Image 1 (tube, rainbow, N blue to C red):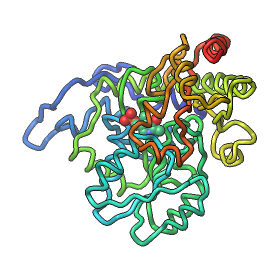
Image 2 (image 1 turned 180 degrees about the horizontal axis):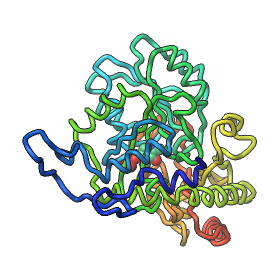
Image 3 (image 1 turned 180 degrees about the vertical axis):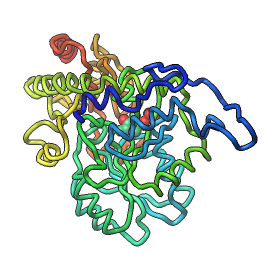
Length: 379
Ligand SMILES: *Cc1c(COP(=O)(O)O)cnc(C)c1O
């Protein structure tokens, strides 16, 4: 089935009681049982909810996986993956990733005795060198937030298989429309559905998709035992969002490409971080594993002035100054003080995330208006 058809029909079965074409919002905490232990497959809404079930099926379908699980946020989904591990186990993670993932690893899980080793995953040899007998999980993000670094999923999957470790890919930035890590050998795909999957900046949610039944059982057990489940209203909204994912992503890609080239040609703009440039250091890998390059990018001004960057960040009219990404509206963000403030400054600088970096989530407005807005703001 082609992507457009799949996204519109993913998870959608007519409601068994009425035939409603849209999955109803089953706003309920419990389900009446016919006799003790005799039920219709639903007992208590932390464990099962029909709206969530429809969405979990949709997640599986759009990521070409067998099983999907929905969580109350992207970080709750990440939290569930780390809970597969035990004290003494080691995770090899990217040194450039979403600040909240880094915070969860270093501030919450490290104290439970799980070890995290951070490496530059854009070169698979760095991962290979870091593998030890304790390595149970490799965690990568590609493209990365906010520096748009690319890691070769297929190559890392081969290293993970050899080490008998799981590979989990945070696929939030690409969305399933542009990249499907399970097809490339990953064991688990994670999304912040808050972003492109929801697509309208109106909810917080996360998901995991996998193929292995045993892994699904373990993660489902964590989901219901720890209870970080999304409500049915949010599940309904993500189901609705997924129906237009392909149309939105096409426009995000088109607008993104135009804005990236506009920035690169602007006399006051310095380095532009976007994985669609042919001279991006891992362009060949991006081209191999992605179907397009999306609407996320970062840039610095040529003079590298933090004050100038802050002035630009405060003067756009259509790009709103806000955290988050992947919605229909364009956003502008200052990673050093906003999305990535939870990473210590020296770590950030070491990994190339400067105080003057500006991140854009290019929306699906008319691109001429977006260019005019940036032109006026950069001055
Ligand atoms: C936003 C984000 C997350 C966290 O998701 P939440 O839904 O905010 O909890 C994880 N990874 C990436 C790449 C993100 O952009």
